[in-house]
Image (cartoon, rainbow, N blue to C red):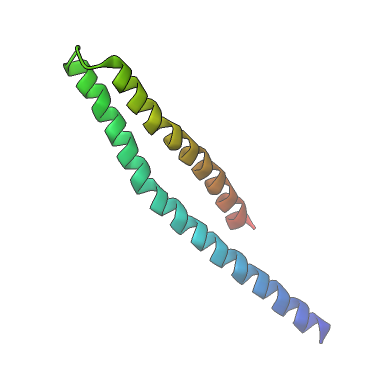
Length: 91
C-alpha cells in the first residue's frame, strides 16, 4: 500500500512541476513581445540619431537609458527563467 502511495505522490509532484514549467514558458513568451518592442524603439532612436546629427543628444541618451534599464532587467530574468526550465526538463 505504501508503494502505491509513494508512486501517487511522485506522479503528483511531476504533474505539478510540469504545470509550473508550462506556466513559466508562457510567462517568458509573453515577455518577449514587449522586450522586442523596447529593442525596436531603441534601435529606431539609434537610426534617428545617425540620420539627424542635430538630434538633441541629452534627450536621446535619457530616452535610451529609460528603455534599456527595464530591457536589461527583463533579459536577465528571462535567462534565469530559461535556465530553471532547462533544469526542470532534465529532471
